[in-house]
Length: 220
Image (cartoon, rainbow, N blue to C red; front, side, top):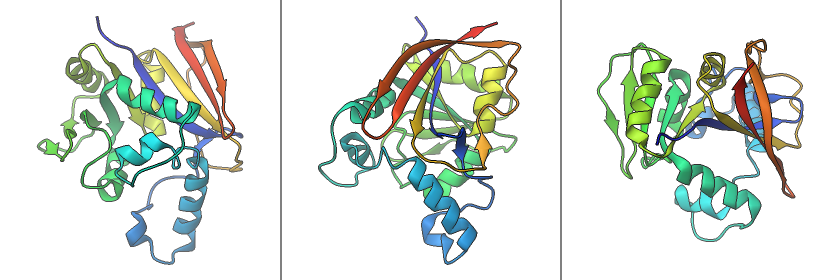
């Protein structure tokens, strides 16, 4: 039996998943003193700050021993363990290629939706990036085959996630609602086909840091 197609993102309280466009954002060691890039990174770090102390996150990125345990840690681990393959857009890959450690944090096949022709890129630890030129449905088909009975995660970015939602290809999603305000930025559901997409609440899980919201996606 095939698994689900899902996504899982952090979101600010005013509805943003990223501060402004990610265009031009580069790896920390390349960032220098550019105030715009420093401000972008500071906002992004605040949005994601719930996950950095978690034991599983630290273990997965080999940041050292220790870390917090509890609901947030359990959710981070469960999200990783359910994922048999991931799909992402080219922009997210371009950013990650410069920012991820040599042992990329996926440890599964990753299918990159792109127009670029490129051979698979194998990384230590079980991550291999495959570059798909035939569109989002072909990328998903390949990811499903690779995932087997496990789930396929649409990793991002926001534009790619929205394409899958509007195409009716997402079964479920989780939003980690963080107590931060951006005021402007990238809204995940900007341009959603609301006439087609209906949501069914699955669960609400509050922690001391954030609130985890999970919804099933239904065709309206």
